[in-house]
Structure formats: structure tokens, C-alpha cells
Amino acid sequence: MGGALALLLDRNELCTTVEIKISYFLAVSSGTLTCDTRIIHKGNRIATLESEVKQGKKLIAKAIGTFLVYPASKKQAPVTSSGGSA
Image 1 (cartoon, rainbow, N blue to C red):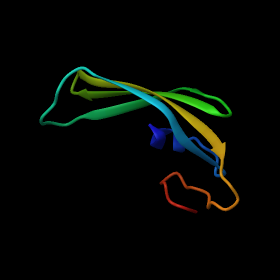
Image 2 (image 1 turned 45 degrees about the horizontal axis):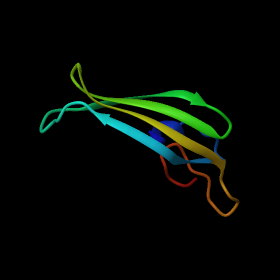
Image 3 (image 1 turned 30 degrees about the horizontal axis):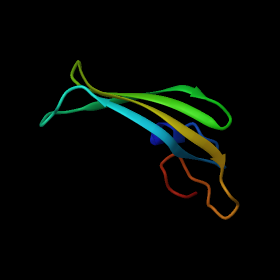
Image 4 (image 1 turned 30 degrees about the vertical axis):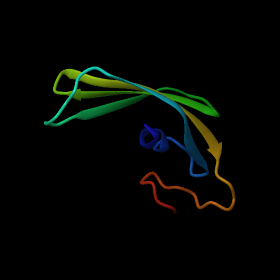
């Protein structure tokens, strides 16, 4: 979820998790899982995201997360969309 949000942040912004709630519906022991994440809301300081994990058409888990968006300090290098420092 944070990775999806990081793609939308300005170069001088960072984010951190405030809360994540995950509901698991089915157990999985093999196969391919996909996770789709959408941003429900992104304000100046708070962002809310929702993710669904599926195996084919079966819903395996669903999560909702709240993230704090804050300015990077001058001591920190700006973060690129790939997660590394610029």
C-alpha cells in the first residue's frame, strides 16, 4: 500500500503507516496471488488506500490503510518512485 502511495508523492514528501486493517477470507497454500490497490483519498496530510488480494476471481483478503504524508527533512535525501534516494 505504501508503495502505491509513494508513486503519487512529491519529491520532498514521505509517508508512514498510521493504521492497516486486514481481513482474511480464505487460506491459500499454493498458486498465484494478485494484489490491486486503489487510493480512496489523498489529502495534504492523510491518505487512505484499499487493497484486495485475489487468486483468480476468489477474494482472499482485503485491507484498508491510513497513511501520514509529511515533508522530508532537509537531512533526508529525496526518495524516488523506485524507493531509492535521488
